Length: 143
Image (cartoon, rainbow, N blue to C red; front, side, top):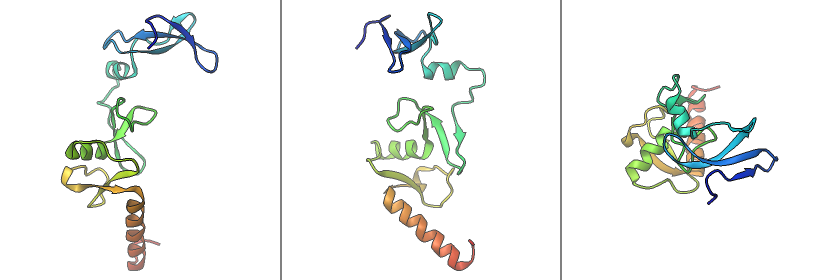
């Protein structure tokens, strides 16, 4: 663990400094701009102090709900995780296994009730949805 105020460089040669967040105290590397730290707050505290912050919940293009959870091991580059994953993990009392995904039983992606979610491997999940698409096509629901 680096010492506080230790100066380093990124792999691209940019200066950075090891600083604690002024709000929560979590230490992290901060890029330097003009000889000063770029941010005095960590990503989580920055988001919560933003006047436009609406709780960290957004929708993906396919209708899934994303929640701000930067400390989660499956968080994306924005620090967000699908809400269905978080709810299923809470119900199971553990993180989902590698290669597993939450499945919405009724097919509605923003219906994240615990009883509507089940854990499946990603291959089982893909096969199930492919089968449902094939059945819908045969019935005439899809082109």
